[in-house]
Image (cartoon, rainbow, N blue to C red; front, side, top):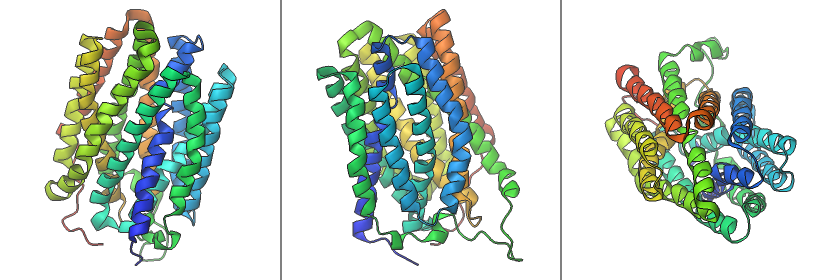
Amino acid sequence: MPTASPKSERGLDWFTFLVADIQTGFGPFLAIYLTTQKWNQADIGLVLAIGSLAGLLTQLPGGWLVDAAQSKRAAAMAAVAGIGVSALLIAMTPNFVGILFAKLLHVASSSVLGPAIGAITLGLVGHAAVGPRLGRNARFGSIGSGVAAGAMGAIGFAISPQAVFFVTAALAIPTIIALSQINAKEIDPERADGGLARQSDGTAIAVGALLRNRSLIILMTCIFLFHTANAAMLPLVGTEMTVRAGEWASLLIALCIIVPQGIVALMAPAVGRLAVEKGRRPILLVGFAALPVRAALLAATNDPTVVIAAQVLDGICAAVLGVLVPLSLADISRGTGRFNLTQGIAASATGIGAALSTTVAGYLATRFGTPVAFFGLAIAAVAAFVTVLVVMPETAPKNEPN
C-alpha cells in the first residue's frame, strides 16, 4: 500500500491550515458584514438558514461524489476554487440575491471539500494512524482559523468588513498550491473510501444496510442536536457585539474565534491519541458536556470578557468533535467503501441542525431578546449530552490494523 511521504504529510498540514483560513470569513464575519450593509437579524438568519438547508441537499451528493471520484485531490481543488468565487461574490454583490447565490455556491463547494479532506487523510495514512492524523489536521486547522480570525478582524477594523471577503478569495490560490504538494499516488483509493466495498458475491454493499446501522443513526442524532445548540451561538454574539461595540465588533469577534482555536491547537493531537487508547465514547462525552455550560454562560451575560472566556469551552467542543466525528465514521463505515458518504450524512445532520438553530434563535432573539435565544440553545445542548450519555455506543474496534 502507498505510504505517505514527509512532503505529502506537510502538504496536508498546510492544506488544512489554509482551508481553515478560507472558511473563517463565512461565519460571524458574514453576520458583521451584512449588519453593516443594513441587514436586520431576521434577514441574516433567513439567508443563513437557506444556506444550511441547501446543505441538506448537497452534503449527501457531495460525499457520494467524493466516493466516486477517481482523484480525491482534484475534487478538493474544484471545491476550493468554488469557495474562492463565493467569497468574491459576497464582497461585490451584497444584495439579497447576490449573497444567497454566493452562500449556495459556498455550501455546495464545502459539501465536497469536507469529505475530500477526510478521504485524502484516510487514503494517506490508513485506519490505524487516522486518529492521530485527524488530531494533527485539527491542530493545523485551528491554527489556520486563529491566524485568519486575527488577520481578518484587523482587516475588518482597519479597512472594512467587505475587505475580509476579498482576502478570503485571494487565499484560495495558496490553498490549491498546498494541495498540489500532496502526492496523488500516495492516496490509496481503497483506503480513501473506507476499505473494500464488495460482498462475497462481488456485488456492492447496499447503501440501505449502512443507513440502518444503529451506531450511525445514534451518532447522527447526536450531531444534529449538537449543531442545533451550537450553530447560532457565535452569529448571535457577533450581531450583539456589532450593536453594542460598533467598530470594535470585528476585533472582539476575532478574539472569540482565536481563543477556541488556540484550545483546539493544544488539545487536538491528545484527543486523537486518547480516542485510540481510551475509546471514542468517553472523549465524546467531554466535548458534549462543555456545550450546555457555554450556552448557559452566554445566556447569563453579554460582558465581552465573559463571552470571550466562554469560548474556551467552544475550543473543547471543537477539538473533540473535529477528531471524534470523522474517526467514529471511519469505524462505522470500515469495509463498506462508503466512508465519504457517511461524511456527507454527518454534514447533512449538521446542516439540518444549523438551519433549525439559526432560524429559531434568530426569531427568539428578535421577538424576546438574545438571552432567551441562548436559553433555548442551552436546552438543545443538554439534550445532545444526554443522548451521548444514555445511548451512544463505543465504535472503536478491538484491533487497529492498517
